[in-house]
Length: 489
Image (cartoon, rainbow, N blue to C red; front, side, top):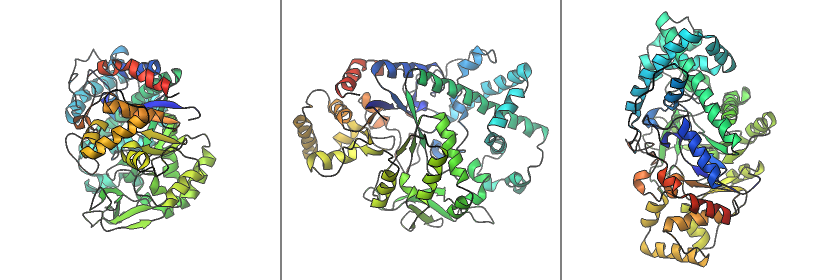
């Protein structure tokens, strides 16, 4: 972030695809080509980890593995492992996760069988040696497919396999080998996309959730890293945020809480390893829920809401001192949204991490009331994020008087032409922030039906929006090139 630049926020799942979900195939490269042509230098994505509860990338089955749905089947065809795969839900404007997973699984198994007969398992073993996390993951996922319930409800000997690691029977061992092969393929395909982006001068921002999902290999294989009941392994306390302006009952996320005392004693290995792995996969890391490195909300697991809880302080400075001493070249963005105590910003600024300016939430105070410091260079400007309404819907839900005030404020800044959303895109690009990131939904002037996620809800719409093709996006080429150039990005 040394120069002013612009980026687009778009989940890989939302890329157009012949097979119902965005993947690591040619359309990822076409998107990178379009970014480069228009003058964008950054692509921000959502976590690539295996989707867990509610198809949320923030409740994954692993912090290290990649979801198998991202495999580009056409690449496997080019390798001669499977015949060309027919289209599946290619024109669907949303991802049907269950159907896509079932569709792809058949072809992935065929490709695996053919790979073994052609190449054996030498390369798979080499991948496992260089990525040791994949060994536990492969067993976890093998068990998970046999016992779909949460891991703490599996048969006792399966739950506790991780402690003694007895040899798997033949069928289970082959399934685990398959899981290792899948990760080898995914890592190779993603590396090709990442390398292609680098060749075009495009940096990729990856998102790292602060917490991990309970029903995950992370917790199953690192139980002492979390605060769990020693008898049934259920969390005794869970994560969330307390009541605020947006919710009278707060948000009870349900993720397990870290055992910070043990983490401290172990040199924070678990979290350091997560961040280091992601620093290889991406160029810039956005630390989600950054405020929890200063204070986190701990809720008794027995509480159905987030109303009851207490603030706890982790050793944030000690953690970042160690992290940056080991990996001094990390580029980090701090997700510093919400009702924060001043110490959170002090922690952020101590390490010179850029924070976030979400203009939907700051425009009123900054432009109408002329208060708040929302124009810092060391920040990233967004109109909205994956957790907010699109700019179009957000604006038209404002009271008419407020809408008029926003439009007048834009006129005062000399931004008078185009749709309301286009004017807001121009406003975002002109901010002092070194980096401005636009969501694809706002670029395409889409309404609430294209919203990515509504926090605190589980339904069949969250995380499902996707592009059918790039036509409308490419049709915005001249407008986007113009606002990037005019903003000096």
